[in-house]
Image (cartoon, rainbow, N blue to C red):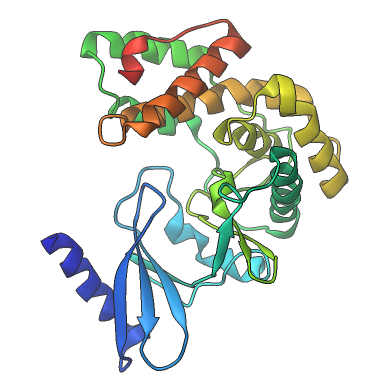
Length: 290
């Protein structure tokens, strides 16, 4: 509680709120960040504040400053940003994960946004490094050290080679349905851009299917068809199939590493690792999701 109060005090003392009568309260965050809702006493303006100090190696928040101006009308443009804080206009709406519509309709909303991001944004960002992300996750998964090296060898088998010949675009990297919000005018917005990176578009498509628990057998063709229609390009479907096991495994390890603090993540870890087994024929230790 003391840390939370100290962080709120730090937030309200940012230069962007100087001279304003503001109040802040905790807001449900993204899992990696502490988030707050800031209300200005005079007027109806509200701000969404994200503390960037709780992060991991895939977080590219600092590099994203040059990207935001290109995202106007696609994602909220920051009101303020420094090395510790990102302040955005608060969007009053519902994320499509919680929206009571068919999964097919969620895909129909989300995939064109992903295509717009790929086509509209062009910025110098870090290249995707799955090796680095897996290395960091292996340090957080609660399994015996004697089995970590075995798991590392299994992961190495499924890491894709560099695909320099494929066009690289700016990828979202975490386009789950909870990161798309529909405002009161029914306009869709992209949120949580901390993991933007440059990679083949096929990586983002594979991660989109994995992170939203879309079974490839049922949804692969639907997602690809919507993407190709929206982007007017032919995707490399074989490359999607190469990235998909890595995305499933990455998500499975991420959820498993947080399963003790968040028991609901164990079921999500189980789904990701079961799908990994189905698409590869390989299974990982059940100790990951205990």
